[in-house]
Image (cartoon, rainbow, N blue to C red):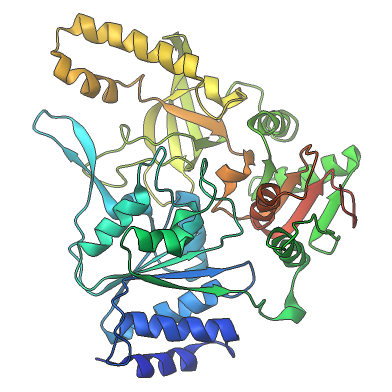
Length: 470
C-alpha cells in the first residue's frame, strides 16, 4: 500500500501511545518526509538522526515508526554497535537486533584458503535500518571507518533509509571529541544527505525517577553556557554510599546471588581491576586465576575462533561471555594462555572453544601492553621465518596463528564507562574518581554515561550527598 508523507504522518500520530511532545511531533513529521518525499518535500535524504537525552522518548518515537512502516511496504532491521547494546535493544523492542559488525560485514575464504572480513553488499530493497546507541559509532580507530562503511552499505541497497538513534550527552568513541554519527554538519561535508531532530522535553515529568533527575541535572550542566557541576540528590532509586560497611552490604545484595544483573563503573582500568578482584574473591568465592562461571568481556575484535559456515562469524570488542570450563594452562611467548569453553551472554548462540590470554584479566591496562604485544609478534615472526613460507604470506600466518589470535579478556563485574556504554544493568555502582575540577564537560559526560546504565538502582560511591563536590 502506497501512502504520501501527510498520510503517513497522521498514521504515526494515531499509533503514538500518548500525546507526543512538540519535539516528538516534529520528529514524526520529518521521518514521514524521509520515507515519503512528495512535490512539497523534494528531500533526497537517506539518513535521519534522532537525538535526545534520557527520558525524552527516543525509543517511543522509533518504536512507533517501526510498528507502522512494515504495513506500508517497508522492511525493518534493528542494529547497535555492540552485542550488549543489541541485547538491550532486542529486550526493549521485542524484535531481533544485530550488531553493526554482523549487519554490514561478512567473513569469506580467499583463494589462499585464509579468511578475511569484507563489507557486505546490501541487496535489500525498501529497508529501514534503525541503529541505536549511534554515539558509539566511530569513523576511525580499531574498527576502521565503521561509520563510512555503514553509509556505503546503505547506499548499495535500493531505496533504503537509515535512522540513527543516539544521545550526544554520552561519551563519544575513544579518542574523539564528538560522536561523528550524530554530527550533522560533519556528515553533510562528506556528502551524506541527512536531517535531524533533537528531543529535549522530558516525557511524563510526574513519573521521573531519581536516576532521571540526576541525568537531567548533568545534561543541563554540561550544555550550560558556563559549565558547572550540578547538585545530585538521593532518592528511592539513587543511594549515596560513603560507608564501607554499607557498601559491602549493597554489594552482597547485588552480586551475591546466581542471577545478579549488576556492574561497577570506574574511571580507570586499575580501579576496575581492584573491584573485580574483590567481587570475585569475597562475594563469588572464586580463588583461581579464572573460574568456571566467571563473566568476562572481550577487549579486542576477533574472528579467528568463529565457525565461518554457521552462526556468528565475529567476536566484537565489548562482547560478554561466561566461562564454562578452562584447561591446558601454559606459558608461551612471554604470556599466560589457556583453552576455554565460552558461552555467549548477549546472544542465543552455541558455546565455542577458544584460546584465551590470562594476563589481561588482572592487568591495569585496557589490553596487552605494547611490550607484550611486540614480544608476542616477534616470537611468532621467528616461527614464520622458520616455516619456509614466502614473505607474501606473513600477514596471513599471523592472522591465522591460534596464539596470536587468542582472546584478550577482562572480568565483567567492574568496567570503565566506555566498556559499559550501550549496556544496562539493574544495579549500577559508580565510583567517584579523583578530579580537581569536576565542572568539565568530559567528566560530566562520563558521569551521564555511567548513570544512564542503571535500570533500577544507582549507587554513588564516595559522592557527597546533595552538594557540589567542588
